[in-house]
Length: 207
Image 1 (cartoon, rainbow, N blue to C red):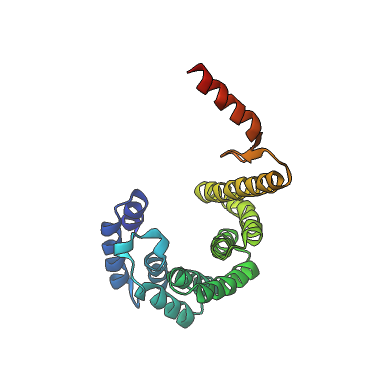
Image 2 (cartoon, one colour; image 1 turned 90 degrees about the horizontal axis):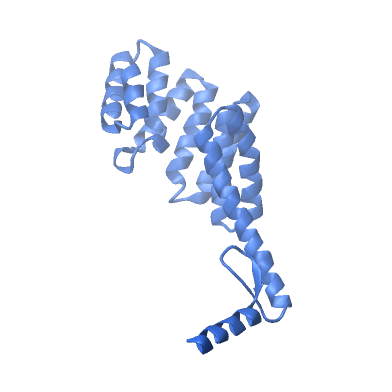
């Protein structure tokens, strides 16, 4: 199991998957903790490349969590199944993320709460609900920071920066509509189109 985790961390995913499966077989019905760990790794499709993902693992993990009455594992399984539905049924995915978030919040599991908020924010963004998305991402960021998840914090920051830039451009475009002879550059800054036009005329004359 240690070698499987090491290979997964280093990007040797095909080898890691085989090792987790072998470990799962040898531990089945003898070591519940190892079984739960291997199922969690295999069920988390965000860890695997597209060709190595299998929908059966999140479902099997959910069944195992239900049978063993592991509340944390059950909520994680809902999160992983939600990931399966993200591209095919956003409503179902959102419902699963919400239920998982409620469970993680009750258990006060910071990182998993943040993962749910990140995904819910992404779904809100797809629907054009930018304010809601930004609120969810902003709430998720300190939870990722407490969990020392630097990569996820960076992802959140990139999303929020994109929202801020888009908001800046929208405000600038609104100002342009209200102010004659102005335009907006790529950075969302307003400039005088009249001055720019005169400058172009000078360049043409000089040529």
